[in-house]
Structures are given as C-alpha cells and as structure tokens.
Amino acid sequence: MTGRPSRCAGVLSHSCSHGGFMDSSNRSALKLPSGLQVLSVERRVSKRFAVSLVIRVGARDAPVGQPTMAHLAEHLAFAGRNEPLIDKLVLHGAYVNGMTAADYTIFSIVGHADGLPLAMEFFANIVAPLQVSSEDFEREIPIMRCELVDAAPSGVSVRQRRLDRFYSRLNKNPHWKVSVAKEQSLLSQVSLDAVRQFVGQQYVPRNAALAVVAPNTTDETEASVRSTFGMQETPVDRANANDQPIPPVARFNWSYDTAPTVWICLHYGSNDTSPLARLVAQQIASRLGGGPEGEMFKQFRRQSGAAYNASAECYCWFDHTSISSFVSVNKSDVHSAVAFLIDQFRNLAFEGLNQDWLDRERTKMRRQLDVEMEDPHSMAAAMAYEALRADQSKLLWSEEYFQLLESATEEDLQAKASSLLADENLRCFLGGNVGPILRWRIRRLVGS
Image (cartoon, rainbow, N blue to C red):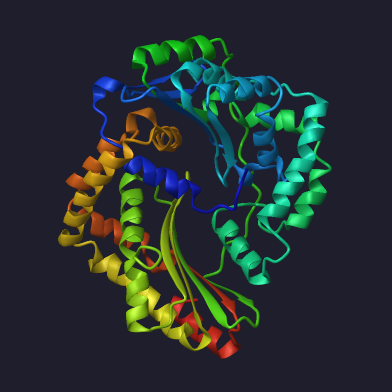
C-alpha cells in the first residue's frame, strides 16, 4: 500500500519519542559488514515479536517517467521466494504488511515468537537481489492499478488535487505533476528488468535498518540476524536519489473553485533535522493540536466562531522538518483566519513554549512512555525509522529522547522554535472561492 507524503514519517517519529523506557541491559545496536543497521530489544512480557525493516527509498525516489516504481517494488517484495514464507507466517498467526511513503518504505511482521526465524528470512530476501518470475510481475500490475484508483477516486476535487501537489512540491517529490491517470498509463510501460535494476540500487542493506522486539535475549537475536543476513555480499553504494530539479514553492499558492468553504494551509519547513528541532516541532504541533480537543481548534471556535475543521501536525522527514496547520472556514472569515493562524505560530515562536507548558509535557510523556511500551509493533517500526535518520552514535532511544525534553531549558526550546517558525519558512495554500482582492490581502499577510 502507499499514500501521499503525509503523516507516516511524523507518526513513526512520534512513536519513537514515546516508545517506552529501555535500560541498556535489554537492548543492542550493531552494523553488519553489509551496512545493515540492526537494533534489538528484549521484551519478555509476552511471546509476541515485532520486526520492522525500513528502507530509505520512497515514492519521490522513483525514476522520471516511472512514478509508481517504488510502490511496485514494495509489492514485488511479497512475491517470489517470500510468497511461501508469508503463507507459513500466517499459519503462525502473524500479521505481515508493507507501505511506501514519500521518502521511505517499511515492511513489518508481528506474530508469535515461533515465527521469528521465518520473519528473518523474509526480510533477508527483501534486501537481496529481486527474484520474481514474469508471471508474478504480470499478476501484480492490475493490483497496482486498483490501488491507484482507490488512492484517488474520481470524486476528488480539483482543490484536493492541487493541495496534494502543494504538499508534494514542499516534500521534494519530482512527480508532483503526475496525475493518477498518467500513473496508470505509465505503469504499463514498466518492465521487470527496470524494477530489478531499481531494487538492486535501492533495496540494499546499506540503505536499510532492521529493528527486532522479541522475547529472545539480544545475544540470541544478534546471532539469528548474523546467520540470516551475514552471508550477503557488501553492496555497491546506493544510487543517488532522484535529483530532478523541482521548482521552488511560492510563499502563496491558491486554487479557485465555487465551494462554500475555503481551505487554508500554513506550512513551516526547515532543513534542520536535529533531535532538538524534531522535538520542538512535535511540541509545537502538540500545543496547537488537532480535532475538537486541540488548542488551536478551541481557540478558533472561541475567537472567530468560524472553524469547520482545524488541525496542526508535525512531519519529520529524512532531510527536513515541517509543521502544517489546516483549517476550513467560510469565505467571509478567510482574512481573519489566516491572520489568526499566523499569530498563533508567531506567539509560539516567541513565548509559547514556557516553563508551565514544558512541565505539563514532561508529565504527559512519562505516562505515554509507560503505556506505549506495551506495543512492540510501534516500537520496532519507530526504532528502524530512527536508525536511518541518524548515525548509530546519535541514535535516540526512547529514554534518551525523553531525557532530551527533560534536560532542555526553556531558552533552548524557544530559540529552536523561533528558528523553525521563521517567516522565510512559511508557505501558504488557499483553496476555494477567493477573489483577487482577497488574495492580495492574504499575500500581504504571508509576506509574498
């Protein structure tokens, strides 16, 4: 499965920041000669295991003219040698899944500990040369077409498509102009040899991280990993990601239609991917919140009475960190709504992350750590994702991430918030019945 470049990275990073306390005695990290990063956690509270493999290749890395290549490669990872393994894993009660996001692909298996050797073999096949038959390949093409249709049904508005393009460009996807109809047409031109070449360049151990949460000791897990993955040849360096030029995103973007409400999206993006930047971005998004329980939503309703929908989210990418807010309002409230949103972010940039807020967040995180320790699936996925974001020496386990929040001063967090929410990082999208005079007024607000 796949999706637009949206919440996946943020969700994984958020999960890692609340993944549970782990002392050094029940966790380990190593790098195999092939370059594969391996993280393991001993968890003996049940017989359940969870393993995740994250590969640093996503939809935006697909070659020009073949925008579905990364998604198709993910599908074919379940075919060939892995197909009978999946059947055996299912008999062990395992859950098996994969997902292609904008800048990474993740494969996950959760099941009874008896199935762990099968899971290891499954993941080892993924980072080995692709071995599928032409019959497997041809069988997958119509399945891909169905997923493309489901991902963008015919009822999607022009406004939604343009908002998706806005996000795609912000997240450096060279395929941002390609429609679903065009993707379906280009899919028929993809060959099995082209997929094999793509997998050979991208699905390599040096470009991946494996995380194992299991009732086994870390020594037992490491021995299993070495015996399963250790014979793989050291791969050639990964091919460069798609470096097609993407035009810069204007400060102000808009899409016209006659719908009764107007969509407003404010997006702050920064190239800062430091742990402190990601932590602060999460805290900003948490402060504004999403849905009826979120602070931004409540204030919007209270001060303007105009919000149809309001949310704020943090997106942690491999090469940048961003915060997006979204609100849907009546046309008459657009100018005041944009001004309100900008004020909310500016207030947070200069005074929002105060000591009272930090103390409340620390208390909340302590409780979340205890609760989410019960979910090995989230823990494994988050650890594998985080391993690709930083060198092993800089890897933030859950406890260290919490300690970062504990040790950071109000001045540290405020300085980082001011940097992330700098005016030059702001981009705005409006969708709806917005005339030229109103657009001019909004442009002035966002500094365009």
